Length: 119
Image (cartoon, rainbow, N blue to C red):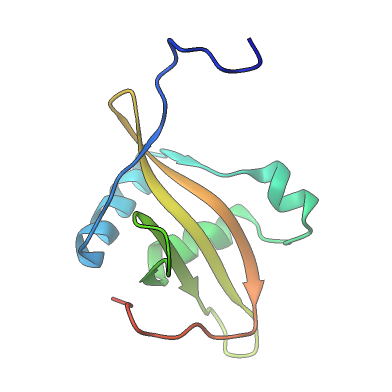
């Protein structure tokens, strides 16, 4: 009832430490099309990011650890110096033995993030 089925597997965030291994796992999930994007949220918030930009950020962007949540990451992609960067906030999740890449949000940003934990 109300979407709380106790028999449904709950997604579990997978913790990662090494950003190089994370990048490899993300590439495999992109190749297998195991990516979940909250399009309702992205469209409702007016972020104006399309699937190709999200995939470019995840494929070719710079990865960073989230500042406060273990197992959450940022991918930042700057395709052209004159354009805003694409920022993708994501997690890797295990749902009943099925590994998925869960995009939490994606947006454009002119500001650059600090570079403390990038690959």
